[in-house]
Amino acid sequence: MSLIQAEAKRVAAPLDQENFVAAHKNGSSTRLPHSVLLQLKRWNTPTIFNGWEQITRHYADQQRYVNAEEVKDFMPHMGPMVGYAVTVAFEPSSPDHKKQNPNAWAEYYRYVATQPGPKIVVVQDLDKPATVGAFWGEVNSNIHRSLGCVGTITDGAIRDWDEMCNSGLKALARRFCVGHGYSIPVRWNCEVEVFGTKIAPGQLVHADKHGFMAIPREDEAGLLDAARFMDANECETVIPAARSTMGKTTDEMLEGFRQAGAQFGKNAFGKFGNLGEW
Image (tube, rainbow, N blue to C red; front, top):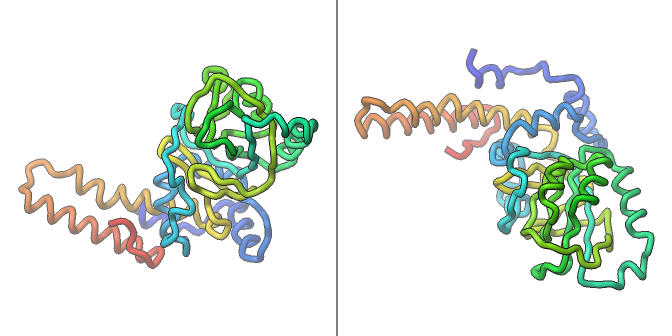
């Protein structure tokens, strides 16, 4: 049985995923079980996108859900990360915020601690495009890692890169910087905008060296199945056609590509009712 046939006929999904899908259809706020998140983490973010585009009704508005601006992965060796967003904004140029709320750090940490993980901290730098200081360094990375955070996406800067790597917290950011400025949480548990993309608290996020995407709530349940299927679809059609050309004429190669693309589309349409990329 081929990968495509196996995926198309697979009905014995793990019980926790089945329960999630059923609960989700009934309007529950249940999140994906950790076992499913671990499987989503095995794929790069473009592969997750390829699955997502097959099941979403938001494809025509896809730029709302992926980073619209260039972002840099400072820990590509850690691979992809996936988790639910905890959100915060800060303004390191202003000394006033600490005076207005001297307990901000404690209150913010309590918010992070009470959210279910795994968590990705999405940090909006209100000073952008200026870079005054970093929210992230050695200390904050270790604190957040102990609170169940696996990484961050910030449109500001990071520092203490080696120490951040040692903490195990992955970071997608705009740049490095030296100082921290007046770094204190200004507001949290709110919608933020980073790299031209709005992310809400509790939104599922997948990110790697290619960028990130924020998954609409209604698309979570079918995401893993769709990503698996579309990756298998590529591996059984268009990729073998491109890698099995030795001894063929140009016309034979082009015809092979055409047939493989047609089969790719047929497989995708049979599963999702969409033709897919090819």
